[in-house]
Image 1 (cartoon, each protein chain N blue to C red):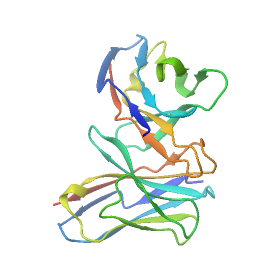
Image 2: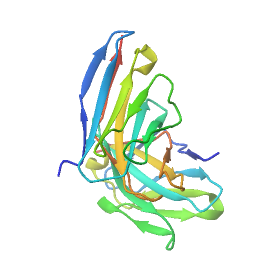
Image 3: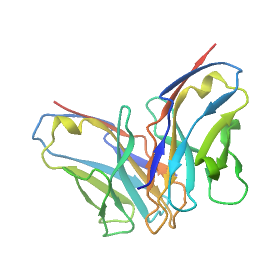
Image 4: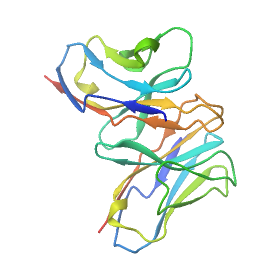
Length: 114
Length: 113
């Protein structure tokens, strides 16, 4: 069965520091992979997605992610974190087929220290 | 263009009461989804619809029913609410086919006492 693992429940970084959020997936075929961000009390907003092709994908707000098939990973990175990046981040894998269902990880809560 | 909207934003129910959550989208999306979000569990799919008049069960459908009578609306019903249904509920919509972005509503926070 498909699954997504985000091993870090909570991460704290200093403003200006680099960030990497980990995501591992289990999926039989080439997956569709997504990163969403959720600010407090808000819905989810898409940061970036991977379908095929270039394994390094760029997203909004200066985020990028790299698809590594050999490691079944899709880690999210940002070179310099801003205080406004404090939020919860969700990795998701697309089911494929005719339904476009997503399977979400349990999320990583990011805190940013001044 | 409002995107995906959800009504109500907050609700408190007593055990055994019923209610309906409304999701509306103005993007002409074929697919719509209902998720629940619980601490430490991410988002779990309750029910989904791939078109007007169609619905299907997701990962955690028990205790919920849905209807998609109009393409733009997707209703989630709780016939007899239980404390275990205390959660934040999100609606989402997307175009087909697979791999398209899902657009999310702002959520409904439901408490069942």
